[in-house]
Length: 185
Image (cartoon, rainbow, N blue to C red; front, side, top):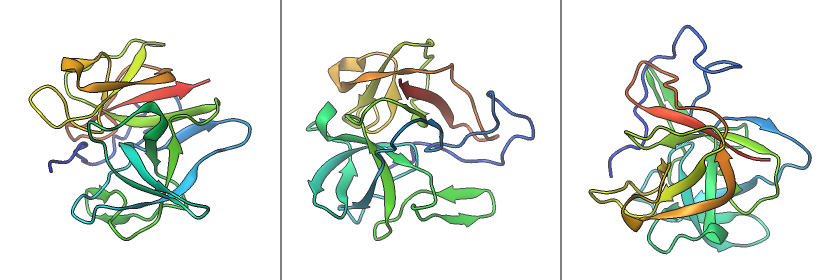
């Protein structure tokens, strides 16, 4: 499966207030943080930071997640975080997200309010501040599963109710990948 976000070198100048935020970065969390540990249940799909994933298993230890599919709902959606719990591999010019056997953190989309997180925005999307947030549920001509959209593209999206865009799109690196901040306040 193609990557959702194409990395490059970090820009020298901040592209949004507060700095160069890469996908999966949460730079605003208030109150109790309801992020949870997770692991990838599908070994052949490397999940990326800032991607919306589907919760398919749950116990007292962690969530089992996989890439978003047409079965995704608000109750099963989660956003992958880039944090100190997650594990990453870094090489020159590239930062990879969670691997198939490594722990990482997610925010369930149904979590209480108080979050702002950087997500991977689908190409050609231009979010409006406080606009509605949708996630693609199929990899097709219309959408890319796990990427964020501003409208229900071709009915292959699920609305992330309670989440809105906290700003416009930006490119944190010199790569072609674009990001946006979504909030649940």
